[in-house]
Image (tube, rainbow, N blue to C red):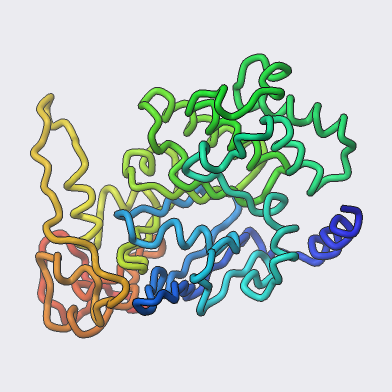
Length: 356
């Protein structure tokens, strides 16, 4: 344990950040090499994460959201692996680190809240034992001090009677309480980046609101930066500062949250927004589903992955994926409708700036 801590200190003291840029993902590719062929789950994702931001990553199931997060954490299991691109945490290239090196970074600098706390928590160890394991791995606290820290963490995430609860097992906690334990574990070492993968899945609406409020409060208290992965646009509108919309392993649109909801510039984003229940003058508006099914990433389309389902598809959409066209300094979309040569379509602003 002492050797691991010494190594951890060496790797951490050499990390340097440029201005407020915490994480830079550049053309990330993650592939699963199966007996049926290569499943290209992430096919060139790029984004920057700056201090204090809450980045929402949204999209349908299978769009590559969770695989992007697991790639950042270095937790992609065989037969998958990061097959291209770059993930930089400050000046540290994460794709070049060994597993032992990532183990020291994980939990201390970058931490993750997983979407299923029942399978993420070990049923044969108490909550306190599991919290203490994380604390002892990344700090120089003694066992007794780690136990007190575990109690403090449970109190911080709103679990009543933490002195009693710390000795209990996961099956003695409700779903919402188990999620709070996962959050306590993720923030136990004050990480700079907190990744929350569908943190409100399978929770009722009241508990969802409490968990989201807790994440916001902890983000402020710990001065962390957050990546929130979700399929719920309501959650995104409530707590995120900017959004990446993913589809078919690619980023279709990237924007600050207000501009995305007021002025969506990709047909897929527009389709997602039209499928969200809303009230218009006290009456529920009719939902408009997106026809068709997501692409097969075992055989990804050569052009835009959304073109078979898009109401505005053109010839070029089926042949070549669009680059990210910049709409303004906070908003870009990967759609050929923004090419100066594209036909005019109401609601879509043709780019005057050009490609990213």
